[in-house]
Length: 155
Ligand SMILES: Nc1c(NC[C@H](O)[C@H](O)[C@H](O)CO)[nH]c(=O)[nH]c1=O
Ligand SMILES: CC(=O)[C@@H](O)COP(=O)(O)O
Image (cartoon, helix red, strand yellow):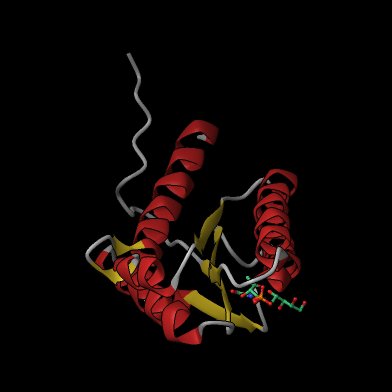
């Protein structure tokens, strides 16, 4: 039985990263986690490119530009949407998640959803390198797995 494995980096993998500046205290930690993971899996910094956007709502557009450029094997999207006192949170979260999923399906390359959607700052801190891990690191690991999985299927 042939089982496709996507965990090892055997060939060059080029990664685009879109990071939101809103809640930069959190998103910078997510970016650090993602870069740490990529380096630990043998991907050099010359094969990573980062684009900063104002907020999570702007991520899908730039993710689409990166995914459609042909320059990257995967795109990692990083953000932190933290609920405020209005319903704005709901609209941002909804459009970002739908947008990122749409970009991945339409481009045919992995576009990873590394956008925290939390009720409060504490929950975001927990997921940006403390007690709940680093979602940026997790997304980078997932990106590598998806690229290798696709390469295996298409081989
Ligand atoms: N409240 C948060 C935002 N809001 C800003 C939007 O993402 C967008 O930049 C603005 O509406 C202009 O289009 N963004 C986050 O990333 N996180 C938040 O908690
Ligand atoms: C997620 C948001 O857009 C939110 O932080 C905005 O805060 P508020 O709902 O208090 O305007």
